[in-house]
Image (cartoon, rainbow, N blue to C red; front, side):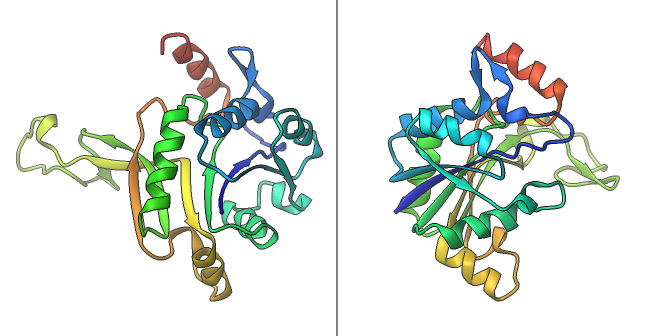
Length: 218
C-alpha cells in the first residue's frame, strides 16, 4: 500500500498557523491535499496533525486524518518522532511525505517522485535542488578550489535537500527505530531532483511573500 502523508503542525513559531495561510485563494494545506489527489498514485492520503482544526480540510477533500499526540506538535518534537508514530498506527508499504509548506511543488513532481520511489529499491528517497555555484562549508571549498577560478557550468553540482518530498519504506524505518538508529537516513538512499521553485519552503513571512509573488508568474 502506498500512502501520502501531509504533516500540518498548528503551532509554528516563525509564521503563525502557516498551514492555514492562503496563496492564490487556497490554504497551503488544501493545495497539498489537492496535489496528492491529482497525482493519482496513492492508495490513501492522510493529513497528520496534533490539531483537530485540520480534520475539516481532510473531510472536505475526502482524505484521511491522523491525530498525533499533542507533544508531537510542539517545537521540541522532531519529524522522525511524528513519522514513527504515524507509521506505528498506520499500515502501509511505502510512505511519501508531502510538505504543504512547499506550495510551488507541482502535481507532476509529486507523481514522478512517488512513482520513482515505488519502482526502485531505495529505502529512502530525498528531494533536492541542484545548484551549480561555488559552495563553501566552514570557510572551506566544497565543490571548487581556491587554486583556480572555474566557470560555474563546469562545477560539480551540489544537492540541497528540500524536504518538499520524502519517501520511506515503512518496515525499514520502524526497524531502524527499534534498533535506536536514525531512521530518516537508514538503508539505501536515493536522490530525486525537483525544480528550484518546488524547493521553496515557507518558514516565515518573507518566504510566504516570495511564494505569493512567484505563483503569479508560473
